Length: 281
Ligand SMILES: Nc1nc2c(ncn2[C@@H]2O[C@H](COP(=O)(O)OP(=O)(O)OP(=O)(O)O)[C@@H](O)[C@H]2O)c(=O)[nH]1
Ligand SMILES: [Mg+2]
Image (spheres, rainbow, N blue to C red):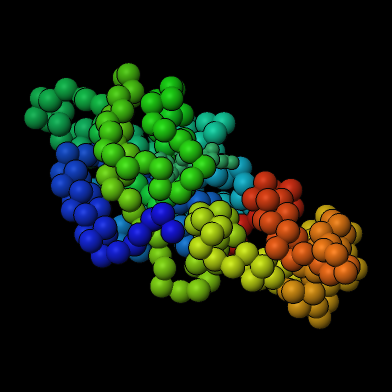
């Protein structure tokens, strides 16, 4: 595994965040709209408590719109400002800017009373690897300033990005670890591609994704892979049927479940099965 979640690493990120938070106005926390619970760092609230926050449900283009709405309402009910964003198309960025203005209102007012000029807010963008921080920063900045790559853990060094007239942005200093305290969270991170495929058993994860679909969206699997009724079927049986449908056979006629699982994951992550949110508030 490329990312080592050893305590020294966490201590370093914690120290960097606490150091940098003194010079920022607003914390922008990105989560994956498909897994808003599992894609949050468990300690981020505590580390960033001294600053106002805007929650961004990123990759909303891949999530179920009704579920995203429910999450935004949930955060709102807890006194948090949240917006849904697609950092690739830029959808939701207008709402995001309005949200920053809203949480900055008190500070602007105090500054004005002191006779200070309104200056661009400094934002710290935080989020676990691969959640779309660089893509978000690029889109806000309107240029390819931060490196975005489809590999968890690509951004390593601190960088301020200036956006003319708008904001000054800082990518997460250090690497913010995801939750890794329960099995379901790890699974959801694996399903969405937030952790590298090499660190878990793809066949086992594929069986569990089949089981998730059988329980929640059986019709979507049935239609896509032309399967018979899924009622009463186990994940591994469904995965084997998908493999058969897609011709993933090894000599002797047995199903290559590894290949079947990779197809399933590629298509799930590519939203070929639909826009699916894995977690509700
Ligand atoms: N569909 C979709 N893909 C996105 C969105 N935001 C980011 N991505 C993709 O998600 C992957 C990761 O994006 P990055 O911006 O590199 O993520 P990051 O949080 O900077 O990752 P690290 O630097 O590794 O921590 C890339 O393939 C992006 O193209 C989004 O809103 N919608
Ligand atoms: Mg990055």
